[in-house]
Length: 302
Ligand SMILES: NC(=O)c1ccc[n+]([C@@H]2O[C@H](COP(=O)([O-])OP(=O)(O)OC[C@H]3O[C@@H](n4cnc5c(N)ncnc54)[C@H](OP(=O)(O)O)[C@@H]3O)[C@@H](O)[C@H]2O)c1
Image (cartoon, rainbow, N blue to C red):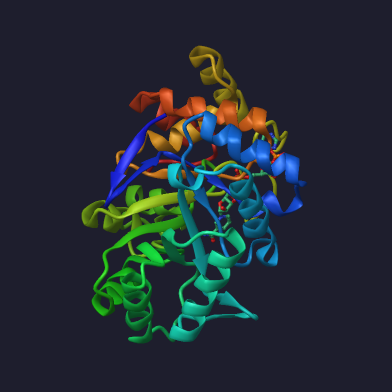
């Protein structure tokens, strides 16, 4: 496993996402968490809304049955999606964090992300972050699904550095990469959807956390082994054989190869797949292999 030094954290390049944990029983939750840890994944991603709090509760039960485990891991949660709106108000942020701490049964979050941008964001975010930092309830802060302009705006309001931006990225969801390679062209790939967020994050030392790394569309399903994407799967299979890993691990290695030094948020809850994906951190794709994969997913270069 690869680790990145981010503020005071030594976080694994792979993050175990906990969104789909809500569907598991207690034993399966235990196996998911312990398999991730055994394979070097020490970073766990939650949100207050996953399973309406159930994912955090189930995770809390795992922590309870393994004394000392909490201190070996980095726990991140997210807030601000609430009752059909986005809510960056001080009251909401503070009460959401209290709820996450209670469900997880922990004293602090290592990281808190604001889940989706609230256009009504204002100075209240700074008041909330200051209160959470001074009480010790949250150690580090970041955002999710924000453009570069929104990050600049929010960073001008808060004194804590925004360390993370969690964004959708996979071989079948490459908008932030396409725009940078189709500059000043007329086709759809030239559309800059996010204000050059990839370059912004690299310039400002913001770690991108890639969510839904093996999905296509917006939760449409996985592209792995999917007959709709024959060229991509053929290339993944070829590189998997060459590197003695699974095709899925190659899809993760494709994200890790980018010099932006991204983390990848895995969504699988299957222990065997977690172990297989962990091997992605040992694969370094060549520039040629990276571009071949990008193009086999249907992308073009001008
Ligand atoms: N910030 C945001 O807005 C946001 C949004 C969405 C998600 N997230 C975070 O990102 C994490 C990952 O998202 P995601 O779950 O959509 O990621 P994902 O890893 O792209 O998708 C996981 C899904 O694909 C299936 N899968 C994975 N590998 C497979 C394979 N080799 N063959 C067949 N099926 C396979 C999994 O099933 P099995 O469990 O059966 O393997 C699971 O249903 C979430 O847990 C959450 O923490 C953040």
